[in-house]
Image 1 (cartoon, rainbow, N blue to C red):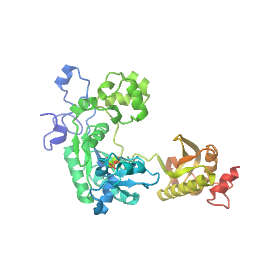
Image 2: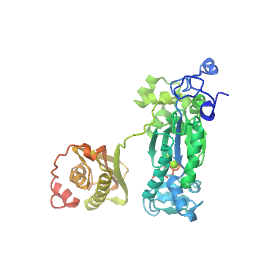
Image 3: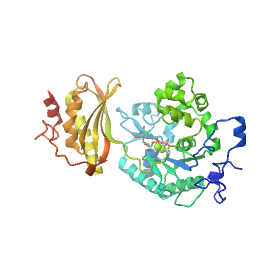
Image 4: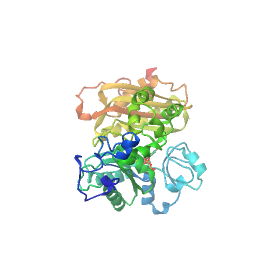
Length: 418
Ligand code: TTP
Ligand code: MG
Ligand code: MG
């Protein structure tokens, strides 16, 4: 059977001209051609072997690993259940109660009063993340991490000399379990979109393979909200246009989709046909670095706003210094009581590389908001346009007054704006 050749056959000789020596790609399917089914990636240029690996209930699983008494309990990693924090992660036992990531902890507690709440320990999660990334990199150079717990691997060529991407995925999952004690789920296919969808279909501890010739059929039945790049606004727009599944998307030309969804239109046109030519980028650069906090109560007083910003700027400044990077653009994010969210940014070609530089610009950004007049529930600071710190010319910087002599006194600085 031709179907699984690329993924399951280890020792079979390659019989076509595909660069990476696997034989599905250049063999057109006569059945499909006759029935007029749109081309799938099996007949297009995409002949890659992509794996997407994602850890199961990552933060929660690490907590269970380190504290066996928590195993099997409904476990929630996140903020204070009696405060206003949100759920970062929850165990699969907690999910049976309807709890999920990003849900307010208070609601999670109402849904599952017996849940055990623990606070996140990011350093520990980073440590495990480093371990799994090393396992990925032992298979291929082409590893693109998406977050602490997941990555794409392009194993078209790999260090193991293994032809079957499925076998590599099994090997990776087994090593992760052996070396960390944690389970991961993986998806295998010919592109990033399909591999990522696949990894989510048999969670936890699952492996799913979507062979190229099954891609179009698979995507046809997929609800559009599962498509990469479809947030709730795009989903509403799609539903208004009568697009509910991948099959519905097939009725639209690329021009029509571009008209409806701008630059994403072309991507949607491709993935409806199982085509996604995005490469796995091993050195995808971080685009921004930031920190934000949901406040315990909505705040109006400027002193409180300033105190929180001081904390955020100190944390972000330390992070920038520790990573030896700087960003040319500083962005202040503010969410008001009614959930309206605004951002205010400024750019400094000399770059922001530490707390003092952040603090020097904050008064200007705060002055462009309604802080002091509207209650605020969330504050965030981030820098973007990142560069290594030593990549910028050394421009002697005069910190803007009124900071001189009052290091870190944001309150005075803001009052000084008058
Ligand atoms: P995910 O991989 O999205 O989720 P998960 O690993 O907890 O569960 P799943 O088995 O469904 O993959 O996210 C990885 C970690 O990132 C998660 O454990 C905690 C963190 N995270 C947040 O802090 N906030 C969020 O909103 C999400 C989605 C994740
Ligand atoms: Mg995960
Ligand atoms: Mg993940």
